[in-house]
Every structure is written in structure tokens, then in C-alpha cells.
Image (cartoon, rainbow, N blue to C red; front, side, top):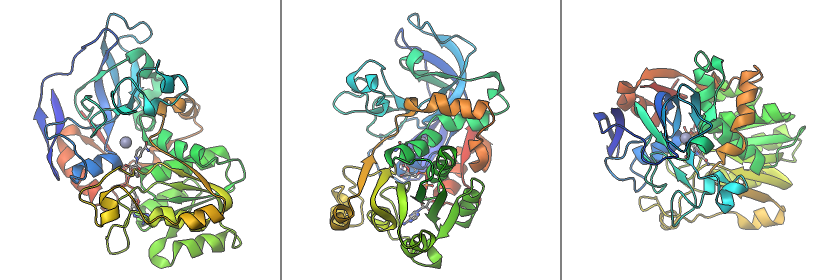
Length: 377
Ligand code: NAD
Ligand code: ZN
């Protein structure tokens, strides 16, 4: 089968690799029809993770079931399914509580597994013609018949919308809240959509990319361009000097200043200042436990110069981590099916799988107009 293979920093190619196949009775085999490039893939693409050369990448996958293992009872050949980026068992202590991003079975020694991702277990990715889905009955989200023509909406259920939604859950966003989101990449834009769905009264989103900020306006959010002045001051001005009720971190550790210089504390310290006292912050941007190529000694050890004193004094609280996609994907699917939400508004490109190398290059450079790419194997 054809698949996107990682070789080294900024070197990927579409190669012929052995076909994915059923390996265990609980597996499902899916022919992929849509697979997104994620901001998380870019950390690997830039060589900032310990990803093994030769790994097939891709964790935002949707397709048609073409074979099921003999222990699979619910999912049938011909079903159209979207796969959470988390690989999870469904029966461990964490999965039982809905914390499928921290499954204790699929990646022994740590908590949480994913397709085609550094340190997330031995699961090849889905930027490929075929994908093996472990624990298929648990992991496959079945899709309604309109998933063929509305594929660009439903494929956002693999990761990016549930992750944006998770940020708003960790931040405890309630109807009527004002919310500030750091980062208007796909995750931040999906957090803005989620705030809209939840009935937030005012949503502000900080970035410096005009194409991304103007997409935010499509879901009623106010774009805050941090090149036009201190973003914290801009949020305070929009909230009568109080700060937003809640905050979402959707940038991650590669947050940088206007010169492109990375400072891993920028988004977190911005949020601590821009969220009102006693508010809450949901952190879904990735922060790794170590970053040998980080720009300073703290960053290399996975640490940061965090404004903890202000965080404490304001009585702030926060939640962090990988999204538990299965906790939300069913309900979010039904918002798409009923016409209440169209997460595909962020999609800028739908390209054949063969175009992956150039798509990665453009998306990684955050080139104007490259807001979200779907690859079609
Ligand atoms: P992205 O990297 O394209 O988006 C990040 C955005 O942040 C960009 O638009 C960039 O211009 C902006 N940005 C950079 N520095 C900034 C700063 N100092 N202030 C304001 N904005 C700044 O990709 P994405 O797909 O939106 O992913 C965002 C983060 O979420 C990444 O770290 C990704 O790995 C992570 N992620 C986490 C999960 C999870 O389950 N927790 C899932 C998917 C993605
Ligand atoms: Zn992703």
C-alpha cells in the first residue's frame, strides 16, 4: 500500500509499504478515504520528537471497513467509520472512566496510545491506503450515510474538534462565559466552534496569522492580532478590565514571538494574565516531558518559566493533556448530522495522498491560506 513515511527532519515521502492487515481477532481493517495533517504531525516533521525513521504517520483518519477480525461483533464490513486518534482498549481503569487518551493497555509503561505518533505505541498511522484499528468494536465511530458527501466535516471528529472541545471542557466553559483562546490553528478554531456550541457570550482568539483570525470570525469569535499590540491588554479592554472568564491553550510548547523565537511559556503566561481571578484554563497544546532541541536549558528538560505566583494569587485552576476523543465524538457527530455544526469551515485543501510532501511543507510554514489539509488516499 502507499503510505506517508517519516525519514528525518522535514523529510517525508509517499512510499510502498507492506499492507496493513488484521493481526488480532478484535482488529478492524479500514480503507482510508480521508486523513488530515495535524499540527501535532508538525512537531514530528520538524524533527522535534523521537519518532523512529520509517514510521507511517497520520492519526486523523476516516474510511470504510473492509475486513473485521473474528471477535468483532458490532462493526460490519461496509460501515463508514471515523477513528479517534487515541488507540484505547475500552476496559482498563482509565478507559472505563472515559479517559481513553490515557489507556493503560495499548502502550505499556505509559498511559495513552495513538496512530503514527512518537512514543505512543507500535501503531502505524493512517496517512495510507489501509489502517489496522485495534479493539475495533470500541474504537470505530460509525457514521451516517451523508458521511460520503460531508466527509470533510466528519473527519474532524478523529481529533481536532474533540480536542478543541476538550480544551473547553478542561476550562469548564459554561453558557454565558467569556473565553480567550491562545492559538488560531485548527485546534484553536475548533475550541472557538465549541464555545459557540456551548453558548459562550464572547470568544476572543489570539494569533498573528490573518487567514486564521478571519476564519475565527465565521464562528463568531473576535480575532486578536498580537502584532497589533499586547494581546493581554486587548483582552482586558474587551472585558471591562476584568479578563476572560475562561481560557484555552491551543498553541503548545513551540509558541514563539513575532521574530519566530520560541519561548515555551508565552501562551501559558498570556493566559494567566488574561483570565480573570478564579477562572480556569484548559491546556491541549502539547508540552513534552523533554525537548533536547529546545532553545534554553529549562525547555530542554520540559520545564518553563511559568508565572506560578500570579496563577496562585488569582486562584486559577487548569486541566491538561491529550483529548479523550471517545468522550465527545458521538455527540459531536450528531451535531454535524443534524446540521448544527460544520467543522469543515477550517479546511483549505483536499489533496491526493501523493501530494503529502508539499502539503506538509506549506502547512508547516503556516503559509497563508493553508489552514487545514485533508489527504485522500
Ligand atoms: P498549529 O501549530 O498550526 O497552530 C498553532 C497556532 O498557534 C498557529 O496558528 C500559530 O501562528 C499560533 N501561535 C504560535 N505562537 C503563538 C503565540 N505566542 N501566541 C499566539 N499564537 C501563537 O496547529 P494545531 O493543529 O492547531 O495544534 C495546536 C497544538 O495542539 C499543537 O501543539 C498540537 O500538537 C496540539 N494538539 C493537541 C492535541 C491533544 O489531544 N491535546 C490534539 C491535537 C493537537
Ligand atoms: Zn491531530
